[in-house]
Image (cartoon, rainbow, N blue to C red; front, top):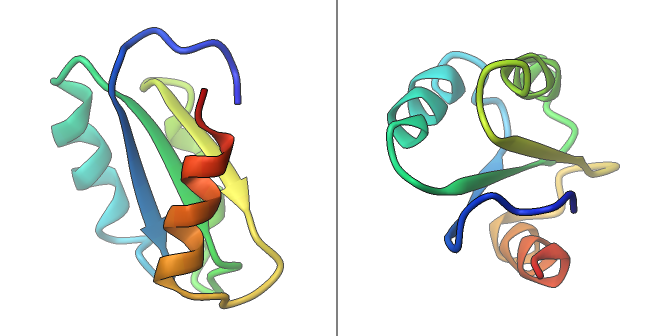
Length: 82
């Protein structure tokens, strides 16, 4: 993960959350947090939406190969945090 700008990391596991993700990131963007979106290869394009949000918010994105589940997404996010 890239250098953190805040002390708090919010891990956002996603699967088919294309329509919800911008609102979540916008709401969190008003807080002093870094965000890590862990996308499970969403067929609705959630990963691409997450990538686009990086232009305006402190978001990092992990693209996983398939639908691996919520628990493992959070664990992967923790493993990538500093």
